[in-house]
Amino acid sequence: MPKKKIRYHLMSTQDGEREFYGVMGKFFASADIRRALDGYPLNNDDSRMWIVAFDGEKPVGFGSFGVLKNNEGQLYDAWVAPEYRRQGIHKSLLAMRLDWFAEHGVVTVHVIAYPSTRERFLQMGFKIDRMRGKYAYMSGATGDVEE
Image 1: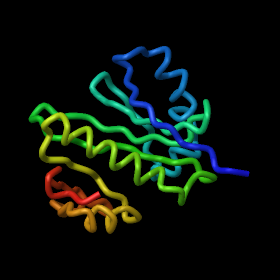
Image 2 (image 1 turned 90 degrees about the vertical axis):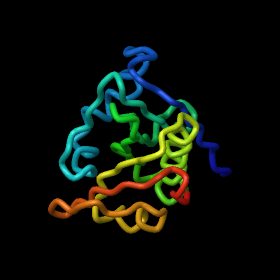
Image 3 (image 1 turned 60 degrees about the vertical axis):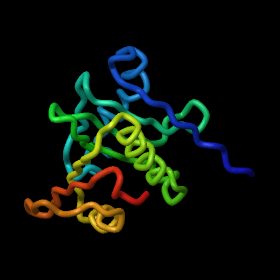
Image 4 (image 1 turned 180 degrees about the horizontal axis):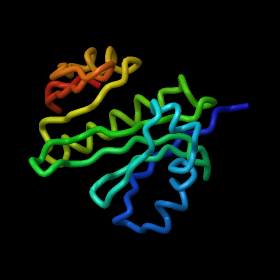
């Protein structure tokens, strides 16, 4: 059976809370996703944007991001359903978020990296600003970051 094409959609509550929570609500309520995000619940506010990956009508992954008051970018949560992993979806979600920043004049991007993602961000050109426990607080410039 041929693999379905994954499509991506930019969403935020600014574009409609009903549509946003209709798609994302189950993820916010999921204990499995909370465990996958190291125990942290998903958060949202009006300034946060989400790129959601769909297989047909089924959401199978997401990545959230926002622009801070100092016009610096922040990468927040990202997750892909286990049965869709190792298909490049997470990499696509990350590339799309970084592209959005570059297209909107956001030069510096910050991320709090889990131990499992720290090496990937280092390979992309992010630098560790500081460590807090097992988390790396990292930053990179969109022009220097390699996707």
